[in-house]
Image (cartoon, rainbow, N blue to C red; front, side, top):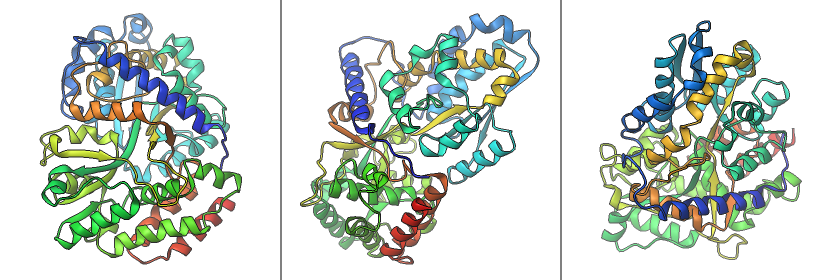
Length: 466
């Protein structure tokens, strides 16, 4: 069901304030340690030594002498990339010192993740830790007591202070203040990343309004340059555009107002938003075959210079900062916020922000061996925030020594977060799993003109009402 929260925006503003403070601390600490490694390139090498030294002495006795334990981790991320590399490095450092503990990293396609977790929960076979969407999809697992109370467990382990308080408040608000059942392994802003060189070569400026955005797109398209890359296979990159228009049309609390029944997705502003995204697709702004474009291909189209713009979250800093993947050069990557809509209630200082896919723990897996699983949790997440920051990642964990030699793009993201006045969530943040799947599945049909904007919104509103 659709869940209502009235307190999200103030809490996200608190989150922004805390992140701003963290950014200020980072700039005021010249000379603090950092590997300077690009986020996607080598967090494993940068973090392994420190992790080996610190991952475990308090837990060693119980875990090392216990029964064999397997830590199963389900995630859509590859083990060698970004935050997954940090978790893997810390876990492997832990298991080296606790040979009875085995760490298994399993990758599941993000498109199947929600359904996969639901099936595993139904068979009481959830992995020890798993990636999942915070908010409404997590509520059934909380109510069925399938997921671990993170606040209680982290407090007992003595590591609750590793979590950023404002991010904790945000995650609690997303599950109706029922508690903390997920950890924020990332903290992101979203916007339009663009190829600065392509813009400059074609005399284009960052658009400030949706009309200007579409004018830029048409100018690029007329010159044979694909304006946007987007994954229709994933669907959400397209619904993010609908959401972007809607928050500028109605204001940052638009989806809360839908939840309260003040607005319907069939209202004219939402139909207008869907129509604009459909027009972008049918005019060829997303290139050929957008419905079958997968996530990595969409990112590569931008990083290889095939497409001029990419709506994306800052979690992709790992690839933007990776010279092996980024062929246009990090210096040619720019970012602008969602443009405003003429006459709309939304303002340009509100950014789409989120904690990404959070990580939750299986209550059953923990209960089966609380000593060993707890020791592993402590060994990994007592260090995660610092190791991730050193690898160039922005997370919802506290950082004792903010790195000063982050990549320029990472610094820019931290500054943009610090300058944000209001945060807004993504389109499906308040949707249950069924409505989320419907939204993201039908998005490609909308973009290719195979579903009308009216039908797209009508089906979705019916799903929310059911």
